[in-house]
Structure formats: structure tokens, C-alpha cells
Amino acid sequence: MRHSSRKPMPVPGPESRVSRRGYGGRSAQELLQERRERLMAAGLTLFCSVGFQHTRIDAICAEAKVTPRHFYEQFDTREALLLAIYEQVVAHARSQVQAALQTPGLMPAELINEAIRAFVRAYTEDARHARLACVEVVGVSADMARRRRAVIHEFAGLIEAYANAMAQSGLLPKRDYGLSCLAMVGAVNELMCEWLMGEDPPSVAALTDELLSMFAALVLGARALLPDA
Image (cartoon, rainbow, N blue to C red; front, side):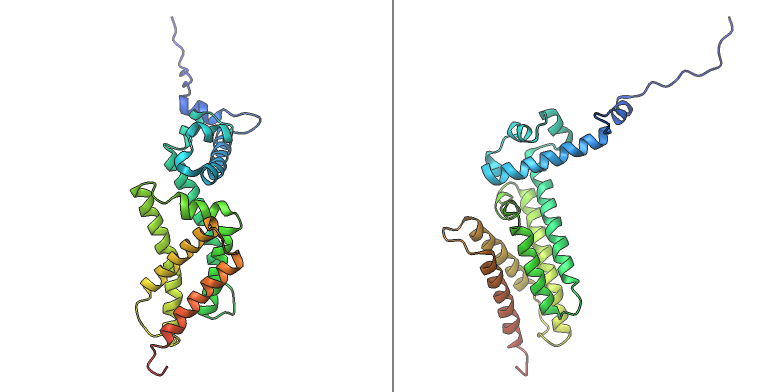
């Protein structure tokens, strides 16, 4: 009997079959991305209404109209979903602040004022962003606390860079502005909490004005330390 020299066709493995499978003209990867976006939208809604600690995974799935299996395709835990949403909120705020810091024709102090306004807008245009970043991520876990601290230091570092630029140009004394800028970011978080949960919450305009006044006081106070002040 003569044997054929033709090699047998390889059988696609599970990963190959999944990568080709789709629905409604969309690829499997597109469906995964759509489910991820729905889960993140559902998480943002529920974490900021019911609260992270009181939100169950099955409620998230019901809100997102996916199955628990689809949830675990994307996230290992509720906290992983919370972190992904937090990173999205922070990235949005970061982009707004960085755009403000690129405003042409402004002095460093004016740029910081624009950055403060941009940050407040980024968190308050959708109040859920402020609630998630300033309330819901607090006290979740040690890992979340470390990430939150890193974000606070990141934004404090942006302010510090411009305070240092003012010091280099002689507008401020040369000193370590790290703690002062960290205190500024801490004040932002506390005022956001007051705006969200206070019995008589300030308006966004009043909150913004207060933060601008605090930065002005920081600058004026530092200027008073100059030798010829």
C-alpha cells in the first residue's frame, strides 16, 4: 500500500479557536473589550452608589449584562476591577492636568493655578470620579493604599516641579517644597470629600477658589522667607 506524503492538517488548539470566534460580526477580542468596558462602567456606577464594600460580583455582572465567567475572564477579584477603574480615573485627571501645564504664555505660578482648576474639573465633572478616587479606594487593602499614596505623590510632584522652577528663577526661596506640595494634594482630597459628603457642601467654584487661595498663600509665605522680602 502506498502511503501519502501529504502531512495532516494541524488541529487548532482552544486558544486559536477562541481567537477566531466572534458574534455579530465582531471578533472575540472585540467582544472581550466590550465586556471589559461594560464591567468597568457597571463597577463605577455601583461602587459609587452602593459602595465598594457592599457591591457583590453578581450585582456587577447583572448591571453589565455579562455572566460571572465573563467577569473572571477580565478580573481576578472585585479589587482588581476597582483598581482598573481607579487607574482610568487617574489617567483622565493626569491628562487634563498635563494639558493645563502646557498652556502657552503663562508663568509657573499661573500654570499651577490652571493645573489645579483642571484637576478639580476632572474629578467633579462626573462626581463618581471624585467619590471613587477620594472615598471608595480608601481602606480597601494595603496594595490599594500603596497605589493611592503613589498617585498622591505623583500629583504633588507636578506641583513641586513648578515650585522648584519658581525657586530657580528667584521668585521663591530655594528649599524643599515636597511636604508643602503633598499637603496641597491632601487638601484637595479632603475638600473633595467635603464636596461629596458634607452637610453643607461647597460649590465646585468655591472649592476651586479655596485651593487657589491655599496655593497663593503657600507662594506668598515662601516669598516672605526671601532675604530681601
